[in-house]
Image 1: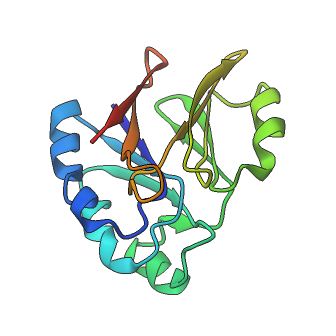
Image 2: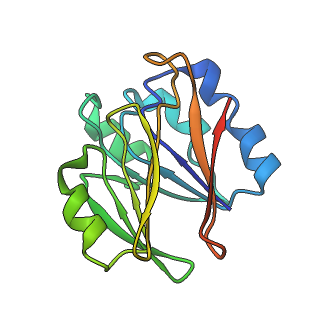
Length: 158
């Protein structure tokens, strides 16, 4: 299972619940769509036995340390990832959303930034904004759980 989250914005109370999410859903891959904010959040996101892919968001100020402490797993987006035979387009701000969504190239397009949940399918492409993991703006901390083999997306709330 994949865990997709965005906009965690240093909310340590929420980030400390990620190990429970990993265990509950048997997560083997985490995608973070940006706005980590500080490097001290990374121990709750990056694990030796779980694949991790992340992109910087507009609120990530300490990019050098985020990059280094993530073992170079957080990159300037958008990025393309191949995982479990699927092609994923990962970004923070949805500047390339329409082009990626309509290209027919990707199985999944993940983005954040807006703090608004979005879950739709265009052709074969699943487009997901998991909302905000921090819950700061909406009062709801949300994330996506994906079974990549079934293309099944569930939005969950902490």
